Image (cartoon, rainbow over all chains, first blue to last red; front, side):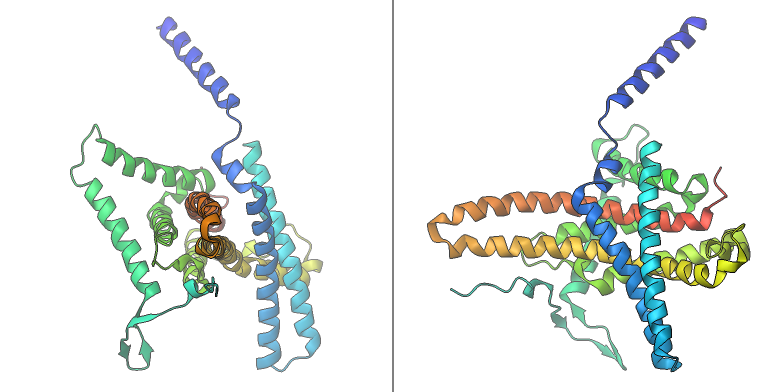
Length: 98
Length: 244
């Protein structure tokens, strides 16, 4: 019984050692490749800006608000885009540390 | 010699016009390829898992490993509670995967390069995320727009930014896949256009086209994976704080 447990512990240690030898998980290498990372950042920024500008334009066109509101929502969109980039990058970092 | 327009491949052609009242539900090259992708997925999964065995045969284990791959992806992103969305993510993954791969065949249409199609799926994921969030957490789910402990003073700035950030997720998800697919196919078309234009020296672009097709094959699989995992991340907001 004790011998079996020791064997299992040894196999577990071997598996862990092999896992550590792996260069990186497929997920990490896929997500952090140059092209993917740049497309991710661009799409996150553009997405936020598009939605912000869209909401601002809708408010301007439908509710006839001041043009300043449109500009404000474009600004909010830009910040939302940056927030999306921050969230995506921190998700990647979290994946790396796991 | 006139060059082929590389953007022509993304044009929608109506094959069978169908109009019901004011609705245009005509069969186009896009809808036919989508039906093809769905049928192919159904036939493959159904065909390979018809005679299930405890010790799986290679075809069965291929489907099982594909399913477990998606299940593990959902479990690692959302947690154990998220297993209820595995069928949705699995269908999404197969649909995008077959869409990307079918687009590589000559005369086939790459429907994943169209904003309307990919956007519709991304919005479906967003709506499911909202429904699941409200179902699991009730109205406290709305705290994703204004987390607890944040000073009320910054609410007028933070709430619009968080709402725009939440609503822009399907846009960025869509843009990412569409950009990848469009750029890849344009590149392929441009390089392939040189094969005949260069005469005898055309073997160089021909070789490059072959390499590009292999690269696009890889990108197709990769993007299907990334689209699915990002959908999982969006859906994970519905389950946040519930993971065991």
